[in-house]
Length: 152
Image (cartoon, rainbow, N blue to C red; front, side, top):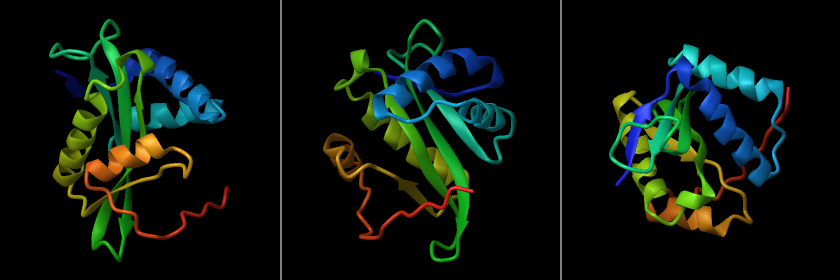
């Protein structure tokens, strides 16, 4: 079974190790801006929250850390108010295919509801069929819209 807990500023170093691994795997640029954004979330939960995922029922610590996920908050007229974005979900490869991501998704939905969110969004690359299937099994629906970005 898995254990999940809210990350705190003292978790920054083990989280950075997981983020680096995720960014390498996804071929994303791991920059000082990423580190700064992570610190900003850990210090200001109104922006969003980070959760640690452990490999067993013991509370997550550096010794049993298997992954993390991030919820950030937005606001949508169409959705009727506050929304959450599952900004990142990462499970260390050694711990995959054991149900941790499924548990994390259920926890993310519960946390988003508890935060007063009307919807939970996720972004997935077209080529990542495993992730897309995981999200579909968890109830996420393709809205048949394109997610476009203007970098500022």
